[in-house]
Length: 189
Image (cartoon, rainbow, N blue to C red; front, top):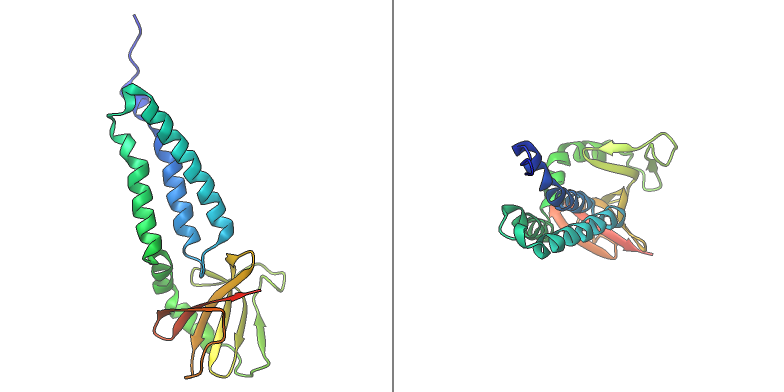
């Protein structure tokens, strides 16, 4: 006669079904924190979503597991993640947390139009973190300040944050209003 598994061990059996969608959700939300998204982080999120879909498919194939509550974890996390990313919640929350540091950083930049401040990353010293954003380069023009965020954008797109101080137009391929005078800007190569 087989010995039943202890209750803690039974709970651990369903863990392999919960971990992949949780990792996929986390990677998707982190990728959406970067201005314009992060293709590098989203590639990992895509891999985790594929694994989660495979685990979910196996779970639905097994007749004894179809009625467990674990079956609903992956679809619910997928819907919540898609909704949060579509509403731009990750970048808006990250910006709300970082706005005081970003404003102080922009006001400390030199005012000369030819001046460029290299972040510690480009100088070989690590990453220049401003709030939760890794800034690689900062330039203050007449009417705007551009902060290049490391890891933002895709293969042929470079994204960052722009603080508009004047009434002039921001020159970028894509401009999306974030908050106040702050914009997410992306330039195509």
